[in-house]
Length: 274
Image (cartoon, rainbow, N blue to C red; front, side, top):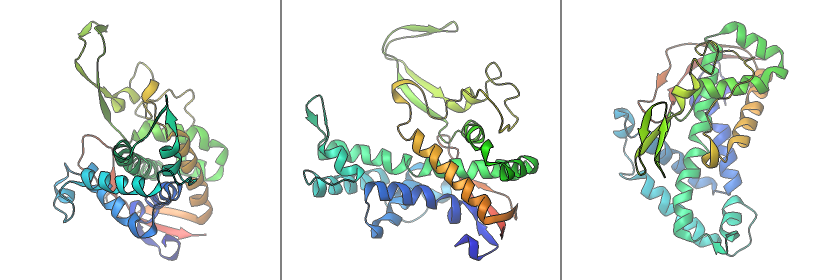
């Protein structure tokens, strides 16, 4: 669509499509239902944004997504399909197969994490490139820079700001005592701009190496979709630079009002097809 016109919204017309189509194909979501899943995911992560919250739609998007996941699980369990949903339902962990209710809870996470976060990565990365024209041209002319560039895009955008955990034992961190049962917030954005870890953390540097960012979390909660997100970013920017010879902002970006996700709602852009 974007190749047919010069002016578009980068988020809606470009960044949203690749992760949306990818995760829906992996899960074999019926075409007719895909738009609704995106709407529910948007409303779920945008519930603190007054404009998003005011839109007509589900009063409880998480519940509607969960109900839809339960329906899919009921239809596919035991039928031997090859899509992600069928594979999850037919697998066992310590002799216990995943039941429909358990999958419904997981589906909410997959539907949002497999779509919203990668969209935020692509949007935030493009904005950073547009704000750094020399870097844009360097990456456009040398795809060999993409692996380190993508890691810097992840650090720079940090699509999810934080998650909360519960301490399983007493521990002391830099003189601060944390008791068993205390709730602890892991702020990935803060970590990714830590001056003790990153030299010039507020400089967007696509050659930064090493780049020990925490955009995907750490430990047993490390993002299961990390490889897919990296691959999607690689494919996206290779194809973007092959398709367009020039890109420029035509208006100010509009960010989602959220303390959880670093999401951009709109990037007005003018594209020149090759």
